[in-house]
Image (cartoon, rainbow, N blue to C red; front, side, top):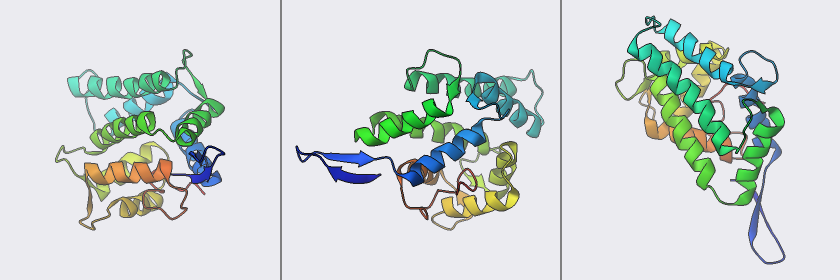
Length: 197
């Protein structure tokens, strides 16, 4: 997790590294679909709408409504985690949340966020519902976030740690943990949301 330093009381304190900050900043930009410098419900709902269109679902179907609901719920839960009563998040709010979680040394809230985000991402990407994500499913989904096919394939190969040409739910969690917690620029999972350097 970040660099560990020792305070006078010999209690380890974790430092939010520049690498971690750059990755979190990059993810903010990926999620800010309308590029207005804020994360808002519309960013998450618009991603849901793009997914519905890509899956060629009827907008009024149960599956389409469920995707939109899950997309909106992910944002609402994020606001809850951040204790933010507003309906938008600034880049500062976003970075401060991850910095505070990592520097606290208590992974509870961050781990909960990673688990929930992993389930959400996995469910969206697993288009054929076989509990595995293929390279095609992964690349198709990342185009919604304006991530190139080349970067999507690189990210997929990093996440596929056992080399079976699929991403499992466990591999997704491992990748997200590395993305948020590792200060190693070459950690497996750093390219999960495209090139961040």
